[in-house]
Length: 326
Ligand code: NDP
Image 1: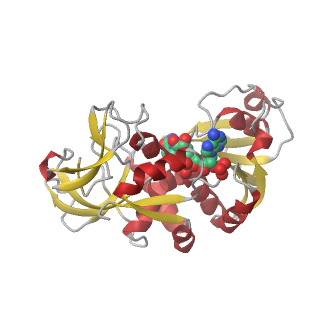
Image 2: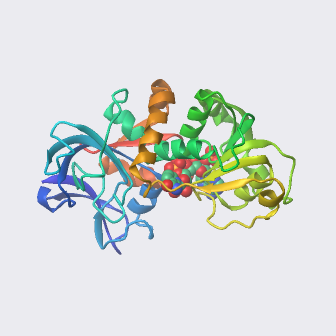
């Protein structure tokens, strides 16, 4: 039997269940899971919100890190340290918030040697998406982004790791946050040099505003994204991956037409393996593990629902990892 955090349609929040090993997941690779993490999507799923889990009953968790127990796929061998992000884990396939996972052979990738299992989970989908966004800033115009880069939802998982990666990569980073001034030192510690109160960007603004950002990574959507586009410099790229604020955006065409601004969508679930590898290489090269440890909190399976409610209320900072055996 394995412990797992399972969601049943129509029954509200997820509950910790004891499930026979052979009833968990499908696929040739069996993984002894050590760590999972709590992403925004997991928070929606484990609190019973609709839209993430597309099955009547499923183990939640879009990330896992662990060790291969057995594999019928020759690409993997027992004892290998692996991670899985997205691919349908915790959405259409039993997920990482369990002591065991069974997955298709092309899903696991090797954990870079520099990271412990806990650190790889702390990076998780949030960090790997942050890396995809940083890579997307190269844009379509070939314009080099040598000025300030803006990150929204800055104290969240994606935002925090995007700031850390950009700052380590030598960029000047500005951060948009709704958190009070008392928490701004956290953002400076990650490498942000300018902090902007989210309230300044939450009302509809002019279609073209003073050109300020060479690029931006947006995790919140809504009017914040519209204003970020209006403030982006000629040729700049805005990588958008999230809608923690709002899924709808009313924006002018002017930044795209008059300033050659690009809006690039980032999706981490269906990313091909080559792009995943590029993102993990960037993390391996540029992510400071002391900084990562400093922004990571650990919880057990039974604490995940309460932590998820705090996350959805915008009260969390950084990353939360789940010790599935605690
Ligand atoms: P977190 O909860 O860790 O961070 C979200 C941050 O957004 C919060 O910390 C807060 O930052 C800000 N925020 C919260 N509520 C609001 C609000 N009502 N209006 C504006 N800002 C708000 O989540 P993640 O970092 O894990 O994910 C961020 C977003 O990115 C989510 O929408 C998630 O679904 C999406 N995502 C998408 C992926 C993809 O593949 N496209 C992959 C990973 C995440 P602050 O207080 O500093 O403003």
